[in-house]
Length: 460
Ligand code: GDP
Image 1: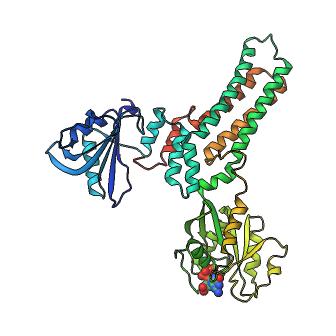
Image 2: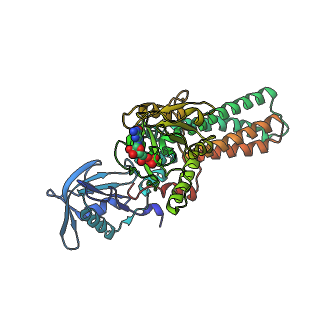
Image 3: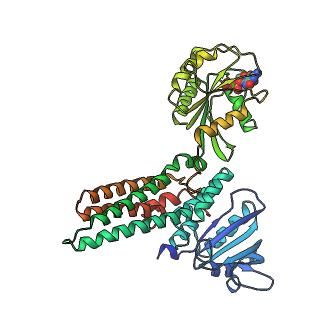
């Protein structure tokens, strides 16, 4: 049996108590299953109503006429539905019991439990959306800020698809021109035409590279910018984290070295999702737990996109402070002098021997907090939106494909200019087209699809 012939079902709302729960069905059998289990006062069968109608009634087990729940049931006919197939959505009472009972009933009636992301995968396999749009659905679900949401919505709207389609078209034309000469080896491509082709390839490659470059900053809107707050114990890391989060997540304490766990949370700074890692202090210690904290701290420094290095302004510097300056010297970081409300006892010149930007901050008065937020943004986000009309690449898979397409185009242009056999040129061109096609799923493999859709939740 064809995989797409199954009718799939899942609970599409989050697990737990809620006002409404939704069980969703998709596939050729969705309407007939709905007919068997739905009863309404005026005896209207779901399959008999026009598309996009909602019916009020009861889900009833046909085996014993037992009423499972009072529901609103909506019907969407193929192909104008989320999956492109017949879809039925049953809105029942929220909570654990009703949705489960309805799901089990639907499965007894012949539906199969959907795999993660299978509704969206079907939308792709039925040609309703392309692969980059399917990925955008996931990005929307995972969006952490309005800005992340906006970028994902544009991708879902098909802007990337459209631009890649234009690029592919341009490359296909250049390829086809060369192919014609492969069939007639006695003819040579005129120098002028060759020049045009090389120019066309360079333009396409530039455009691909520009798009790929947007990833460097745009990715932060999808995955978050990871920021590590580091410094020796008691400099004020937890206090700063709490100030930034404006809620008490990390433990604030007078005892040095008590924040031993790496606590992660998100901030929203001017639309940028920021994943803050709170870290145990840098300190020489024999205590095992403390050492683990330090190791994790070093890992955080290693893996963070950006570092906030804290130094206690109310005390003279210690060796650990100088060590920290050394550790972060090649990192993207901002140096922050903490406890600015207290008299300055730190010799700033010793810490910042080479000068450089620095900020002073107090979590007691709030001084410097806004400047810190601005510094985080300005150090990481420059002009990612300018010049590409908001069209950006946020997905590593897309960037990798674009980069290898650009490399193929460069090799293709080299082969053409070097009067190498056109067959070799054609191979590179095909490679470039395939890589671009991978992004939208025009070219795809089961592996790629499995990898993408397995990260979805069941019911989407
Ligand atoms: P951590 O060990 O680096 O996480 O430091 P904490 O955030 O736990 O702070 C250590 C101590 O410094 C606590 O007693 C805080 O109340 C105090 N502290 C933190 N920030 C400030 C500040 O801006 N001003 C003053 N006066 N005290 C602060």
